[in-house]
Amino acid sequence: MEPGIEEGSDPLRFAFWDVGAGIVRDNLARYARETGTAVEADCIPGAYEEVLAAAFRCGAGPEVFYAQRAEASLWAACGWIEPIPACDPAIEPWLHRMNRKVLRGSLDPDGRLLGTTYYNAGPFALFQRPGADHSVQDWDDVIDVCRRARRDGVSDHPFVPRWHATQTGLIWSLLCHLSTGGVTSLDDERALVALAEAVDFFASLVAEDLVPPGSLDDRSDEAALRRWASGRHLLTFTMDYLAADAGVLAGRPVSVPLARLPGRTGTPLMPGHALICVRAGLDRIRRDKALRLAVALGGPAVDGDLRVHRRWLQERLFPVPFPELERDEVVRDELLRFFPPIGADEAVRRLLDGRRRAVVSPVSHVPFMLEWSAGADRILRDALRERFADPARTAEAILMLWNACRAHWVPSS
Image (cartoon, rainbow, N blue to C red):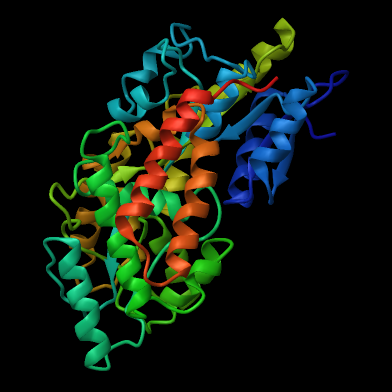
């Protein structure tokens, strides 16, 4: 047993998905050393939501855990999450340091804090490869750029999409596309038209072979990242922090964010939100320990330092909930290495400007989002495989499913 670790009690169990596992384990080890509380790290590389939901249904599972915002919405509605006491003297003083939109996005419909924020999922950015210089106003312009690139032999498949078959893939790309037109809610009266336009864009990419073969068969980010890192493509619309991962694969920075997203408003969207939550039903002692861990990972250290979030931003380019880190000159200098040397300052400015302008996704706040997104993925993926999808019919089916899920959703027990 490490020095300072308490004896005679079971360790807290902390569950997380397989992203930055080394950083997570380092953070937990440091917490254990500083507090004497042992923590057992459980990295779940596969079907994260299914594994945890099965445990929660049995009254078991980790005391502290990651939850994407859609998962948190569902699990809270099922009574599996213990809200964080925002008025606690150990918590309330630092909440005002958080990005206000992210903080509001952490609340349930009754205003309770579902979890602390480790980092954010998004927003999406439109990246071009180094040396390219494209100014696009709308998504039709993107299609035209890709057509010219293919015609002129610049790239056989100019556009790399993020269409993998998970809850964070094809449907997140759809939602982020809708947001660039000013539609962030599927209850918006413009949603049907916006959906049809988005489907038409996706279908054009497929029908004209503007995307790499196999894009609709991806099971994770890895394949698309490797395509982008190869340097054979022109544009990609994906999570902005994946510029770091692509650079690692390529051995050099390969992503330059466009100054503005295409679309009527060009609004960046954060479709996800990595919350650190506490399981409901714990005894008081266990609950207090779990809350302290969630606060330590999602907030500043006891001395006020934001070292956990600084590390996510500097090492992985992850968006974090504390704007003061983005204004820190030392941190900004560290971010330069993720972009090509010529124009790196401007690239960082564009990236951070997109994060400041980004909005959280209301879609992920409904408890039936995962049910809807799974069905919507099938509808859209099947339509795109036909190569000549009917955008209006596909959009109508996606929206009808949304309304049906809302009408019939009941929490599982």
